[in-house]
Length: 387
View (cartoon, rainbow, N blue to C red):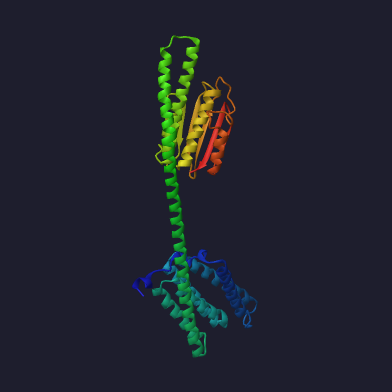
């Protein structure tokens, strides 16, 4: 046995009851109930107590139980001196019980102190504490030295076996936690690989296609502008310019989606300021800024785009406030307008093609919520997602 084994505490997993199976927990509760019953029975069956002594005896048993619970907690926190102090209190209580004629509670306390000290304390402190408890039991609590020898040997073996069993359970628990962490890391790596593959496919197909459309639409615009002015020519030119604008916006949003898939997105507040551009829109950021997940970041961006598109369509000229709030366990986005000349519109079903209904479903998949409806002046879109 190495020197470190004598001074080190049993692992937290070994001392904690959380690592125990249901059957072990049931056995533990049965053992504790049996010991408590033995102490109560041994305290009051000797006929040594009157009414007042009965109250004192009950208080003593309750006090010992409370000290034992405190001992388990201090050992779980690896506090050596408080643990030894509580163990000493239990041994003194055993001496007091033996002097009062309650031999059974005294034996239970001495044996319990011996086993738990060897199981839960560092061996450098547990072995002497066990020796003191078993020595007191052998000298005071037993008349037959053969019985005392067999009992002390059995208790030492039981305490050490319980210690080894707890350490084995703690090691198994740590290995299980490491395996779970490895599986999570493996799943995250697989997800990143899949995102990278999807990003490459989108870039090779959609981004190239949109780029080619922009080139052809720009060439068409230049050719149309060379034609003589007329109503038909102006209508065709207007359609081509609109199609070019839509293709440019689609390409920009595709690039944003690619960046999000690759984990290269810009901060949300920076995106919001770029989104409003030179428009009379106030962007307000509250709370301590932090990095968001790709899913939460994309949801906020899409909802902001959708809400601004609806304001431009249904409330032209309205003042707009975008408020982004970083909360302790979530991030909230609120887009509100002041009404405007258009009188507002149904923000839940109209927009640039994303649809706030779809955004609500995306928010709910992340464990968040989205609400859209009339406010004090215009309409308000409120998003909240965990982050």
